[in-house]
Image 1 (cartoon, rainbow, N blue to C red):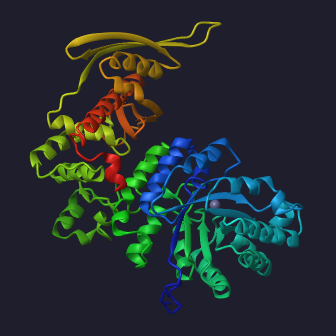
Image 2 (image 1 turned 30 degrees about the vertical axis):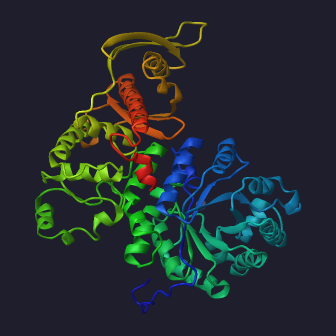
Image 3 (image 1 turned 135 degrees about the vertical axis):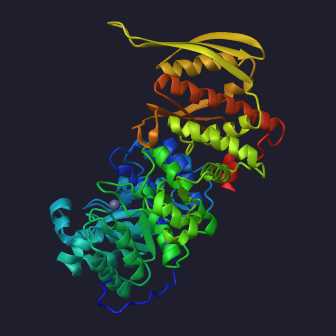
Length: 551
Ligand SMILES: [Zn+2]
């Protein structure tokens, strides 16, 4: 990559380039990130939609969430991806067959098993406290046993670049042990994340020259070069690229797949996903951020909310003359959009983009789009965000079309009582107008939102029995920091579902109970809208959001 060297043409490898996502395992190690089983299932679905080849789901047997995730994934049919379970090579001094951890990997049912192995001699001695030869046997035994059991095996050679620097012979013997035992890929890991692209390119080139197109790359971002290092590895012939959505991961994170995928496809001309899948990248990046409950990246390349935003003055003027002036690619290719803050049409375009992204057809009704745009603009100013709350957005469109909600909330009281020597008591009372008559109910819960949910459910179930089939799956609160002129204090996201599907709604307020109440009301209204749609065999909005997204 240095300017002095003559430029080398990239030679396409006979094996297609494989995107390997580890958001659910390495990404989950990021500070402030904690995925529930339900979060993981939703993210796996998104990754499949994005078209990655392999989704690493976690380490079955190491914690209950991951074990449960793999059990639930047995009933999930993925369209593009295959599932990988992550674990380590057998322990020193026992057979692979007797290693309970390896058995748990097998029992997970995942078609691909990714084993992490030491490839830095010093770590074998200091951390594993075993001999270099035993480590090599641990690699070959474990790989061979899993291959014998009919699994595809990826070996993550941990600390490969550090190991290669201090003892290249040993690091290469680790790769050889895995390759000879039948691993389909050996991913070279920059585990400490401190390498630079020219070094990575040279070392990967050496390994590829010796072992062929079975080399993968797994980079961390501690030197700020995870993406650059991964691209350098691909130039040198690596055929598998590991990384995480939004660059989540331990310390400074893993290589960011949301940057890598468009870089590979749009800049290096390597096809890793379809054009349509690439157009879903922005929505997926933001949805995953919402599920992870971290603010979606503002300045992230390609998918950030400000990646193609031009702020007035000279830039806006130049952009009006030609979009190439301040944009390196067409934002539409990655599903993002160019925004100029002075453009009066930005709002309407936003709505059309959002509606299309959620599979809602606004047709040619420009007036409707403008009305919704105004509403969205006002709500976003209050702190709303409809990314990750498709159901609330769909309701907004529906209301703008004149649809009347089947019930109206009049008011509520939520009480929390904590008295010495007694447990916390939460009670909610709600008044709702259903079919012109007032319903007044009360219920208790393990928290004020739970009590409100129960009281509202009690009020609505007699008139709308389908409510009984719905339940609340997840509840998330984000404290807003007042950026972008938002006045609101908190944003609440609620995930609900029934036998058929799940949906997310949003509420915003300076008060957390109020924000929850708004999100809850949307959740119930959406449930009824869907039930109505099913009875009519299609629904007022036609195709459901999830179906549209899946298709
Ligand atoms: Zn890692």
